Image 1 (cartoon, rainbow, N blue to C red):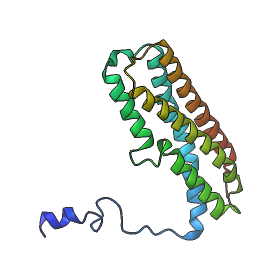
Image 2: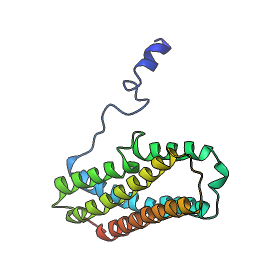
Image 3: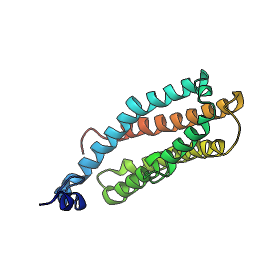
Amino acid sequence: KSTRSVISQPYRYGFIAPSRIHVAEESLPMLCKKAIEQNASMILTESIPQLLEWHDDVANGGWRHFGNDLRWTAQWIYQMIEKRGTGGSGFRAMYRDFLDEVSQRYGQQLPQVAQLVPKMHKCASRWTELADFLCEFSKTEARMDDDSELVLQRHLRQVMAAEVEYAARALRAMPSKL
């Protein structure tokens, strides 16, 4: 086969994703539960420390060294949160929809997932608010100053608070056994 035929049909050859995943229907509630637990754990152990590092970097004036590139950086981060294949809100809107679907499909086995949907909605809203601030900042001629640093820090704290609230609730809500 020519290289061109392999490259032009990557899905067919499984380079990007398998053509089909075989999972027994009765396994799905347990898999969803495990995915929710793992996601909540990763938020606490990976996302929060990174957000805290970003917050502290801004608090210590670390963003001021970007100069004119800061507008481009703010625009790029906005796009990463809202536009670049994330479904908006840094994937939180998409994840909220996943939780909602799990709640609807497996509400009998996982009734506690319903309480997670509004928590994730709050996370999504906070991420969008952060992105909106970055987008607006990227359109100005202003440099990062004390006022804009404080606003950015406030948005980051609000994102972190919503994420911690969701993750803690998710970890408490998931039973040890189905």
